Image (cartoon, rainbow, N blue to C red; front, top):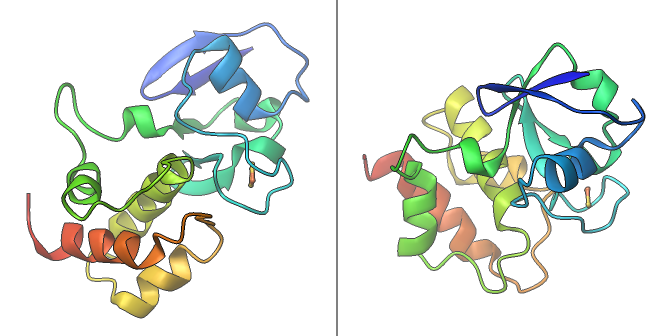
Length: 151
Ligand code: FES
């Protein structure tokens, strides 16, 4: 089947029920999204499907056949990071980094939909993304900064 990821079509040979996460990581070498819980509970595996965050660990690849998948690797432009990637660095919004890709794509979807999202909105949007290091406050700050600090 063909999957469209980060603007490019890829032919993959796999069981259609294979989780999207496995195809991204094992077949396409896009290892930004992480396997955390495998149950749709932590957000470490989040990617965007037609601009909406989904848990790629419990999304069968057949279900994205006619959709646009964006991973953290596809967030920025060629050679230029997404504004959120810059503010995550500026605000040191990570510790081990395991949750970061999921946080970034989820926050990017929020800001695309609600460029003026307030703190409560950011916290709501990231509610399903867990950070075991406890960097949540810095992560929220980074998202708010991406919203207000300009490019
Ligand atoms: Fe997919 Fe936790 S690994 S939600």
